[in-house]
Image 1 (tube, rainbow, N blue to C red):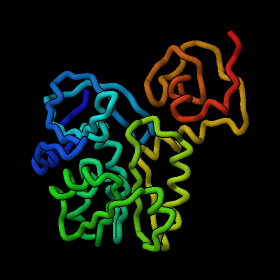
Image 2 (image 1 turned 90 degrees about the vertical axis):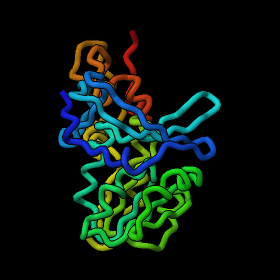
Image 3 (image 1 turned 30 degrees about the horizontal axis):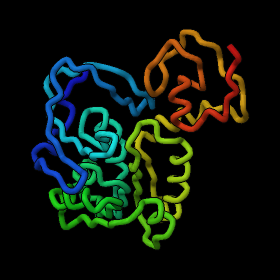
Length: 255
């Protein structure tokens, strides 16, 4: 059971509901007993559990032609996926991806944090979120994170990259983000990407060259979705391996 008392509700206190362009901030309550995905940063895995109590959340949603896309919330999974970055943040910090502003809010009062630059590609998100969370310690940069990481001359003590809307962000993008962020570091600087521990675990399990996937059977839970009756792709099911862009590393068995 998820002890929700371990998690902050500060964003529900700071942020107001609203809409700018296609982006919406909504406040919701996740009910007691609700089964939700959780993240274990120590093990680098995703699993399912239930909430011990009602839990208020703020959700950033984008209206699209196909419906709505949830970009971020401060649900327990999101908080667990960001918390490892908090002790790493010091000096001059770069955060790629504003979301609902959870990470800058969690680190803004750290004495060891001198300044926080936040790169966000959407002006609507900046207007909707940053204007509500900003402090003198923070600056927002309206730019594409990939372009900024590749071109900026600024140097940072800590860089955090969280620009993906899905858990199954292609693993090659994580590697690219780390490579680009490396050029922005001061000596002894640190980098962390969203759910870094999960991707490190997947990366460590990957074959060095294409191999046959195993046949359908009962395996330990997929590292991402938790499915146990599946083919095995280095700890993943077929769907999650496809979503991560890893299919080329495997040759599926002929049924």
